[in-house]
Length: 196
Image 1 (cartoon, rainbow, N blue to C red):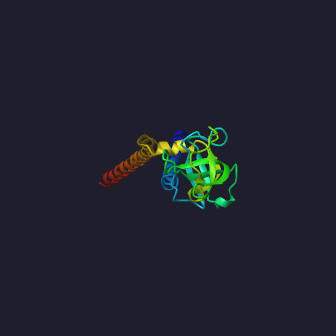
Image 2 (image 1 turned 180 degrees about the vertical axis):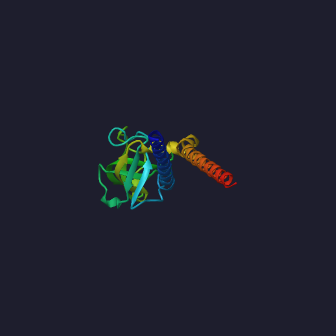
Image 3 (image 1 turned 90 degrees about the vertical axis):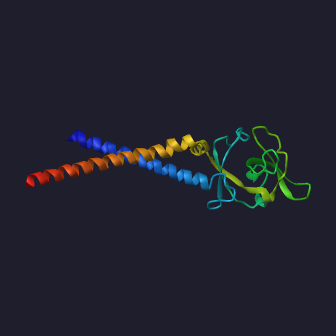
């Protein structure tokens, strides 16, 4: 009797752990689809981006990290600040880059901007980052979480972290329902036979 209670308790803990895990993965999936690497969306003024290269790995963050960026007035930025900006360079046009400000300057049209660089190479970026393309100032990082989000967006990641946990829950709940139905039927049959 005690063994059965312990077994049922362990089974319930495992079932609820799988359910909680699957629910968390769904929340992470929704978060990653709606907010990560979405330049047009922010949450309380913050944006989150997955770092795709090691251009800043010498000092601050590396590929696979998620960086948090807060919207700021570009006028308040100065040398040494790390900013996220939309690249206008033809090699990575439209991508969000997070690099360090080397100095303030102006472009050929007289627009205020920044000379930026990655600390990994210490080489200035090809184009000046003007104020309209600045997305915010770096606030911090979550190490390696981006790798999980990137894997989660793949078919194997979805199967492993979403589909399989839900299938396990469905199968486990279905087996429990079948057992209860079978028990109910046998009890009814027993009552019918006693009533004869």
